[in-house]
Image (cartoon, rainbow, N blue to C red; front, side, top):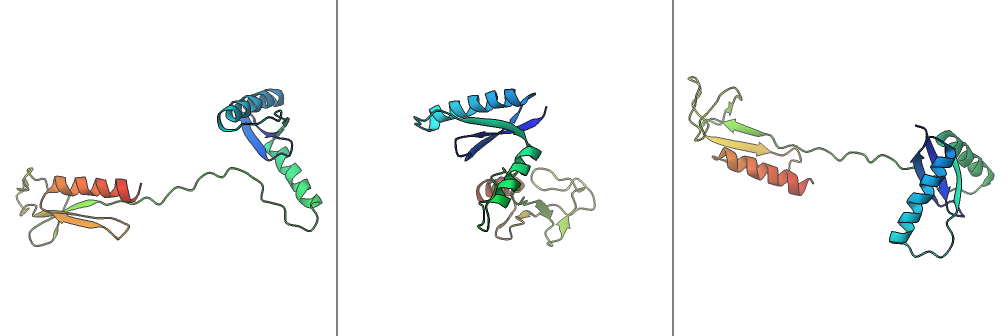
Length: 159
């Protein structure tokens, strides 16, 4: 289904991108959306003015023409919704360590109390988590406590 851009307002300040099979259907849908929005958010007395539905290419060409006609002054930037850039993803992986501070490989399984289930492992002495933000870390003998605090940090500091 093609995407149309419909200007809504006498001075073309507001515009609505609409997916519709025809330009006429796009205009009707834009009018429905804006009329419902105006009842909720605004107290307007002027009648709603719906412009022609244009494809993105037609809209861009018209904006270019307006920019050229504007003479020497700088035209305001065209209002095109940009996709928000994703926020930086922080992680705080938990690692298990032996009593001599060497990391315990993930392949080494333990009981809930840290006793080894693998013959060559001396056992888990503590668990540690360090966030990639470099401003938070935790070290505790309780693996569950470290996991809970790690999740709490990621939820609150990097939400």
